[in-house]
Length: 108
Image (cartoon, rainbow, N blue to C red; front, side, top):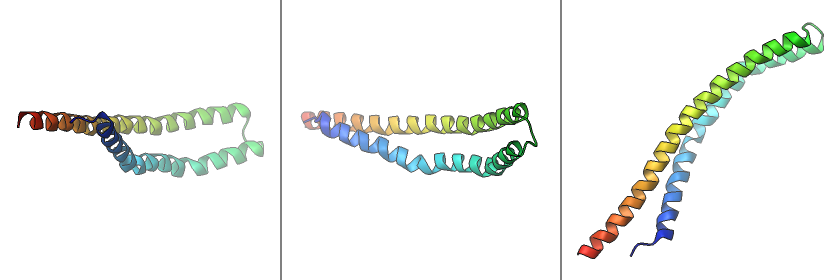
């Protein structure tokens, strides 16, 4: 007998498993940005606080930082698409297997 509740529980477990498996990769992308930019941002803050640069200069530097962060986050977007594809494939493979199991049982 086909039990959609059980099938959906298995599908959800597959999706969650794929996402959880890939969390470290997403975190690594953020940590790379943080490592690359933390000192720069501290220097920019110090420079502005001590009036070594103007607001306009800081805003210009921040635009560069925004572009750098955007690039890192675009990498997350690409990774997220791959994760979504993998999760969808696994979830629907579970559905397919469940339907085929019932069909096989009915024809036996």
